[in-house]
Length: 351
Ligand SMILES: Nc1nc2c(ncn2[C@@H]2O[C@H](COP(=O)(O)OP(=O)(O)OP(=O)(O)O)[C@@H](O)[C@H]2O)c(=O)[nH]1
Ligand SMILES: [Zn+2]
Image 1 (cartoon, protein in one colour):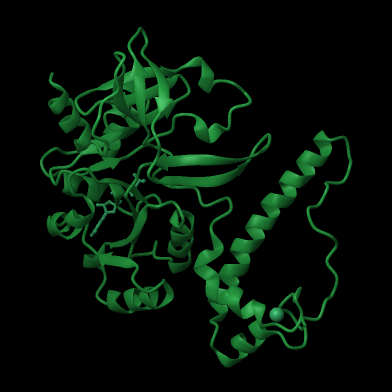
Image 2: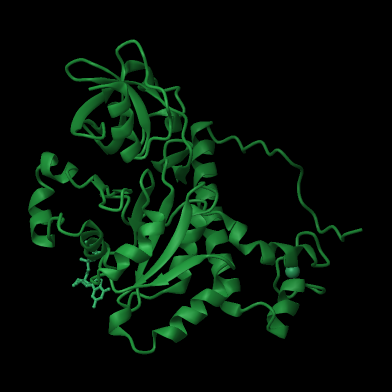
C-alpha cells in the first residue's frame, strides 16, 4: 500500500495528520480498551495490541496512557505494541476518585457527542443539562438529539422548555430514529473525517439510530448483542463504525452511558456564579443571609427554582467527591489533617 493510500484510510477514521511515522512504525486508532489489551483499527481492519512497557509505570499520569479514540504509533510484533500516543485534539474525561485523585479519560479526538434522549418517559431536561456539562470543556461539540418524536403529539412544548433552559446556540434536533430522514439531518456532524459518539440512557434509541445511520449495513440486534458480549471478537466489530456519510461512530460499551459522576463542569451555571458574586457576604450560603442575591433572584423569578436545585445538586456531588478523596488521603497520611492552600474562611463583608 502506498503512503497516500494509508493516509486516505486513516483520514476516514478521523486522523487529521499528513505525515506517517517512520522507523517501520504504523499508525492506528484505539477503538476499545479491554482488560487484556487494546483493540486498534488502521482504517482497514481491527487488530489487538499491548501497551509498551513505559505506559505501565505506576508513576505515569494515567491520562498519558492510550485511551479510546487515540491515534497511536504501533511497533510490529506478536503482539504489536503501542509505543506512542499522538497529541489529542479533544479529550472527554471525568474526575475519578480511586486510590488517588485522577482524571479518567472517556474518549479522545471526538468531534461531536450526540446526546440522545427519548421524548417519551425518558425525557429529562436536567439529565441532558448534566450530560452537556460533562462534555463542556472537552473540545467536542455536543448535539442534543430528542428521539421518538413520532410518539408524541405535544413534543413542541417539551422541546421549547428545553431550548429555554440550555445555553443559546445549543444544537437540538427532534428526530424519529427509525426514519431515514435522520441521515440527512445529522450528516453535518458525520462528515468524512468526523468522529462522533452517541450517548444516552438505555432505551433512548441509540441502536435504532445507529442502524438508521448505517443504512443497509445493519448493526447487531439486541438479542444478538447479548450473545456477542461473551465473545470479545464480535463485540469489537461494533467499536468503530464507518458510516456511509463518511464520518465514524465510536461505539464502545461503557461510553454509551457516560456515567454522570465526577466534577462536571459548572460553567453552564455561570449566571448563578455571577449572581452569587453579588451577595453581600463573600461566603454567603444563599440561605437566609441578608443581602443574598440568589434568594432575591429566586423571589423575583429571575432564577428558576429548578435551575437552582440543579446547580446545588451538581455542586454537592462535586463536594462529596472531594470530601471522600480528602478523607482517603488523610488516612493514607496517617491521620494528619490536610494542608490547605488558603487560610480559614471567616464571615468577611465585601469592601
Ligand atoms: N417510535 C419510535 N421508537 C423508537 C425510536 N427510537 C428508538 N425506538 C424504540 O425504542 C426502543 C429502544 O431502542 P434502542 O435503540 O434499543 O435503545 P438503546 O438506546 O440502544 O438502548 P440500550 O441498547 O439498552 O442502550 C426500541 O423498541 C426502539 O424500536 C424512535 O425515534 N421512534
Ligand atoms: Zn447569597
